Length: 118
Image 1: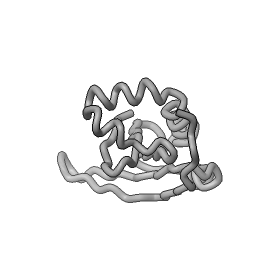
Image 2: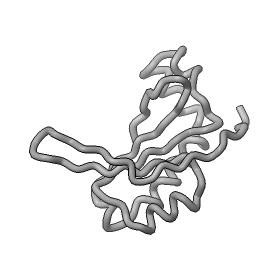
Image 3: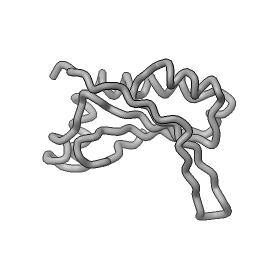
Image 4: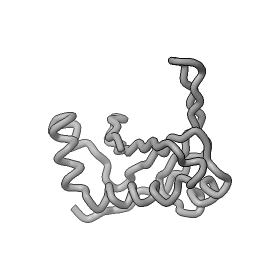
């Protein structure tokens, strides 16, 4: 899991793991998103340490986003992400040789922001 600074208070968590095509993305994906909201204080501390107090204060906790990056996703992954209706993106990557890399958004689900306790 990598905290990603997307600016404008849009907090994202990027997850990349090998072997997802065989196991599917969704069991670890929503778990990571739930962990992020359940461990908000620890994550805010990490953000303050890595990005500074000003950046940590701009995080929009009412709409965290999970970005799952893998070589491929099953149709069940895509269906599950749509059914869960949380802020989750599935992004497929392809490597071409040693350095070129292509990223393709497979599905992008956005749910309305909601109030979370402080």
